[in-house]
Length: 274
Length: 274
Image (cartoon, rainbow over all chains, first blue to last red; front, side, top):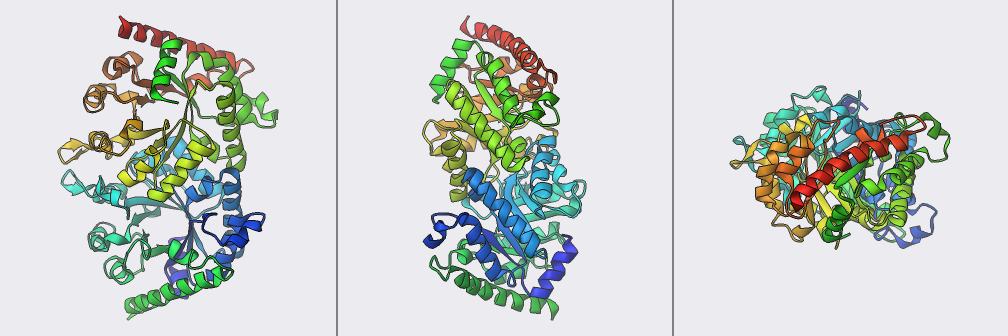
């Protein structure tokens, strides 16, 4: 999917919501455990109930990998279902991968070609030759970790490197990478006051913002500091939506939570268009 | 496996060689492609031919993930074979994972409990709460990326952060993590002159050194600057060993290459014991 198509979807649905599919067998409604593939059954029900309210889905790969081959099959079934039934959805493999040169190409092929995700999250620590192999794929997007929403972000990311915070150095340096137009960035919503400074460095790029809801971020602040003229934001919520209920009505309750956020997003988009 | 058991294996075999199982269907001998599981068939033959010459095996997970479920099955078969037939081998999942808190715990369970690897490689960018979930597993080892052997290492890792190179800050800060005794570090052999400075910060920890051979590192220099009284080194070679031949004699040729390195290692260990 191109960035332009993503922006069109955002305006059409009045939503820039991304739903995180962090599917955990210990948290899904117990009645689903009787299904042949409980993880996919859960995801399918969530997707069918929420697809009109969001523009992106983001499975965190750790949750699938933790179940071995069974998990990998559930991930394949989920992305195949999304691509077949809801091709207008932007799909994010939240994998936080990163390796050297030809090994990065392996990961890129796994997520972009075999699984057919639109994008994948990548860690920046190994530098340019670990990121550029992902950027080489046309109309695929590489979402680089810049400023994460966890406490450990203050260990290195916010420390000064050559006079500039490390996450700002990551933003700046990555703009010089080949095919940098395929970059997006992860920026935690719990630090929305940082967004203004981030926008000075990457005014045009999309930002994937986790941490709304469960992790304490505020949507209005995120939009105030992070939105650009092309919206430029995907705001993720995982647990707050998908685990709204663990009863028979879980999908309906998830849709209600997603609708609440979509309504707020619609207001924020109206401000942009005013 | 405990560190003490690893050190005992090193002295017993006069080797601190780790063999990287970066198994690529395009590079393995063509006759293996007729096997039901060519990746496992290749790995099994390499392991059977080299196990007496090395103390560790390191599958790079990207190579397996790239083949989807088939790759995952080959990885499972490989680690199960190692654990059943050669339990004295130290096993490393070269996954370079890293995520937030409970998500890191998912990855840790996948590699330590389900697959039963002794260790996993981890990226440091997300800080303490992304690493500590791995450290919580008893007699399991977390191998943190410090200084990698690729060109991109100079993008951030060697830059000064608060007056110290970022990779040194990673070494220093990680020593304060809970269960830090379960840490090892990745340090690229192409930068063996850095090893003296690294040993000042982490005198006791094991270092996993990739980049001997194909990537240009020199074993004698690595030992001169990196070896400690408990050896403290695992030196990895992947392509230089496993792709020594792609003919019917591939396993034998791989063993020859491994034997060459083991002979050099034996000399270096003799210096330590002198």
